Structures are given as C-alpha cells and as structure tokens.
Image (cartoon, rainbow, N blue to C red; front, side, top):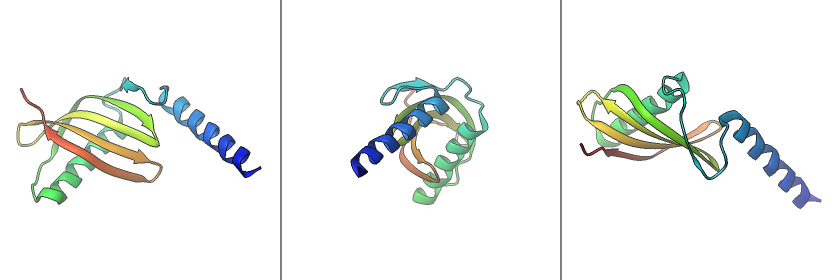
Length: 109
C-alpha cells in the first residue's frame, strides 16, 4: 500500500510542477517572460551566493535569456549581465523553499 501511495504522490507532484511551468520533465524549456520577478529573484540569489563564495561584490544588471528543466525541482539556467560589465551563465536548483547555486561561469564573447 505504501508503494502505491508513493507512486501516486510522485505523479501528483510531477503533474503540479509540469502545469506550473508548462514543461515536460527532463527537457529544457525556454523562459517566455525573462522579466518575470521570480526569474530576477533567482538571478539575484545566484549573484549574492557567488559574492559570498568569492568575496566579490557583483550586482545583477539584467537577465538576458534563460531556460528551465524539471528534475527533482527546477533547474534555472540563465545568462545574465553583471556590474563588472561581464556576462555569466548561471544555474540554480530550486526545490520548494530550497535553492542551490550549482554553476556560475563567465560567458565567452
């Protein structure tokens, strides 16, 4: 019985994530509204975490483009510009009330 409950819970969570993001689990989906406040919040989180890890004092200038992927949460892969006049590719995993910066690398021109 508990296996059936776990499978049902997994299906419900998967369906609610897919409806929220209108995406297929496992595939990358372009972010339609790059100016969405939640996307900006994710980008600001990434810059702040990167600053904590490196001792730098970067500020987000803008989100240039991005896409999401549904896994065990949502991975946001964003291209941003920062206050040092450089562009970066960042990746943040978000699960309910949890976020983790997984990548912050400069983009090559």
